[in-house]
Length: 92
Image (cartoon, helix red, strand yellow):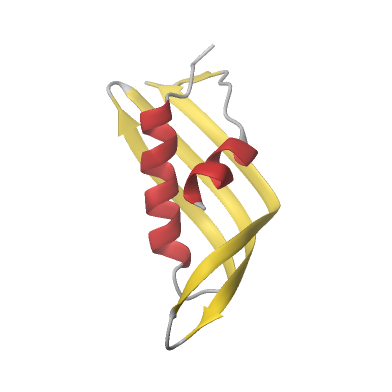
């Protein structure tokens, strides 16, 4: 089983927030290579924000419509312990 590290969660969360910064709906992939392992988040998300333009707007909620997290080494897919709720907690 491939254990998803805190560092990997933070990297994926940072990239995801960069992708959804101005969107209300996101459908796409975030890919990161950790050593020999390719990690790929494929998802469709609803993005909600709070705030106003004077004080700034921030993402307040990310609701997954669908998601998958794949880890592969070479051509072999590895089981992993990814948790979308953990990702969202770190992202927000």
